[in-house]
Length: 339
Ligand SMILES: Cc1cc2nc3c(=O)[nH]c(=O)nc-3n(C[C@H](O)[C@H](O)[C@H](O)COP(=O)(O)OP(=O)(O)OC[C@H]3O[C@@H](n4cnc5c(N)ncnc54)[C@H](O)[C@@H]3O)c2cc1C
Image 1 (cartoon, rainbow, N blue to C red):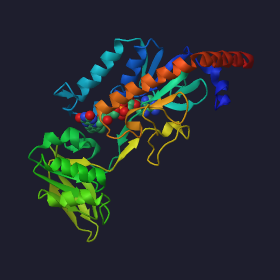
Image 2: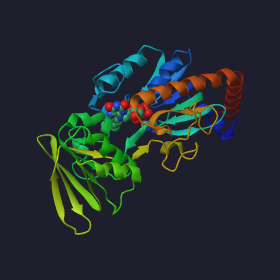
Image 3: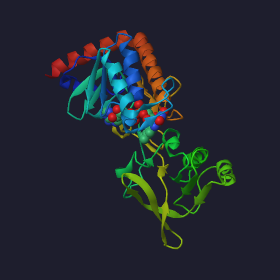
Image 4: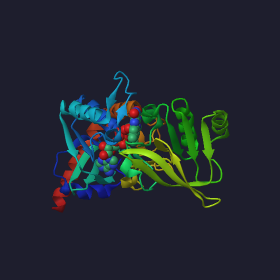
């Protein structure tokens, strides 16, 4: 069963007792996985750089079903409070830097601490790909936005821009066009990458303008609010300033999967390939939420996926428990011999 017997060598460095489940990530997916696992009476540790994950960066949330309106801070607080109601060991402000496969999984933290677990749930989410222009980072939440479903309604009746002419950019423009006064799409290349069917729909909307071969140079704000976008026409080299209230950046998401190296099967975009039970390419390692191939990256989707990953890992523990206990006993004996 063990794919990497070398992982046994690290046994002597672990300080914490063997865990049934180690969850990496404290966003909606990871917290959901940890709570479900704790409710099964399992020994659970959750490691997260930031409890709340992307939710912490969200101003208002209006699509968390059954709660008509909340904020990112409130929902993150709710995630933490719900975890506090269970026996879950939480290690916040720490990153996992390495994972080694074996019957018993070995997880190394940024602090140097080493944990061993029978199963792993990877819920490390994703970050929006940023444009990297002046005025972007400084104005996130004040007119620079990445999620049209989430933040579009805050700009009802206003002029906005979408950066990116791929499928997500044109879908965002169509989504926003029903709410805002006007949408200008900025595509860097001479042609749009989006599917023709989406582009045709966009061309039929009289409040969507598509600009191609243009480079966004900076986002301008006054009194803490975005009020213009500066761009260059790449054909002529001319610079323009477009007055607007919001800029939606739609140039893709970057999954937080780099720390896994080549341990798990990933897509070319870095998403962890999972099946309908959140199983990865490696036995006993599950993944859920935005870091995976699951479509539609949303809070309620991530929570549901965390639940599935936890229940699937529980099934694995029921089936393989005895064998895993034996593997751990062997691992300890081997480390004692080494000492
Ligand atoms: C600005 C913004 C607004 C949004 N608004 C909405 C909205 O209104 N409604 C909605 O449904 N969705 C919204 N989304 C999308 C939603 O936030 C995500 O789909 C959801 O948070 C995904 O959850 P997750 O748990 O998979 O990942 P994340 O929320 O990304 O959480 C990942 C977790 O993993 C941790 N982590 C990452 N790498 C490591 C590592 N190496 N070691 C340890 N920990 C690590 C992070 O610290 C974090 O705790 C928004 C996203 C953004 C960015």
